[in-house]
View (cartoon, rainbow, N blue to C red):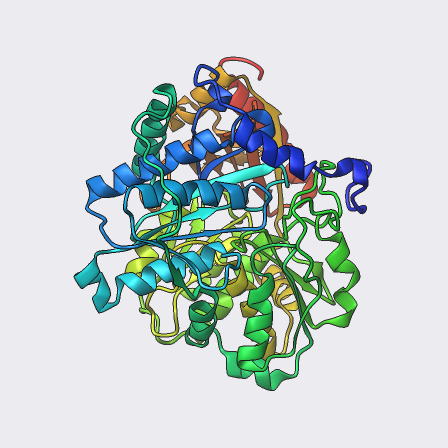
Length: 544
């Protein structure tokens, strides 16, 4: 923990926005340098112009690659595009529009020149593709220009195909390879034109008007709750005001400031500015206002993540809130399929497993990445999909798809619905779950790993794990493929009756991420973590 974590940012902490944008246009990446090549992680290509990893060259190459990919897939409808409030998002969107228009792609941008949250773009794609226009004019897809909660110097670029969610690894692998080819060729083959021939779309109005089909707005309105919403300077800032005005809800937007340097933020755990609504350090400013509200929520820069603050519990651990949301939703959505499953990533809390079992619902455990939930949300076979990193979405009242990307606005509104309908805060409801199922201790630790060791960990087979016990308990499962869909997890997971750990390599740093949980308390969790690191090190052929 950094010594200034949770304290207000100082001038010396802020990025020079002018220099950052200048670097976006001036720097040319060297394709011989791995860190400067196009690389899609779990949610798009990310980098910084200051590190020559997110530049105009990257964006025009990626956009041309997306044009080539969608053409090869037969995607002939409009492409929706939106951006968040990061400093690099606006110039990146302009560069992308030049390529899209230069390739005669039909493009739809925001009608009000507003920022576009990730869930609003997913909603737009799905709305178009279930309308008769999709048959007549072709299926739509989209681009979100955002690095999500990452620091102000970062940029991000994400492609969402016609299913509305994050592109799968086959698509992103093809796009990245094609983009790198274009960069190596000096951008020969990239078509650009003035971005004048674009259409507009009311992302905000369409999204807000449809919320009554997924959230019990009437219950919230009748409750008289005091509700606060902190956009953390992100794309949801005007959405919360629109939700308040459209439905007559008692919502106060506690901070309407948009600043690409995020000078109003408090520093995250590592001393960086990071708009993570699930981090107590990043949410320190919002926590000061908690006493004024029955429910206070936060969103990150593209509003795909949520943070939930209650007067009696403070900022909720994301795993805790996911468990509460699941128990509530599956008890208050009779229109969902009787066999609709509970979706979770394999590094999310096992509290969710116990809740799903008590509900009599099938648990659908998948690798890290929201893209894995897309098929189940589309066909209604998965009622809820959630990640431990505070990202989730769920179905409409009638059991049909809402969004296929994470929706932090939706999960924030759900907290108010839960409080209004049950009369109890999500924090109080979680304490009830802990009394019934046990109170787990959960943590993530980063351990050093060389690039070679990271590659080895990503390809590790469960059979390579020799341990038969973990922290005094017999091992019940060793996994290198997810139980829900048999997809490779890019690492390993080991479980016992009361504990588990999972290890997977970081996509950006020379570390591996070690997730662990124990229902026997913090001391047992520490033992699990220490033994887990030794087990992984041994499997990798020595100490990392």
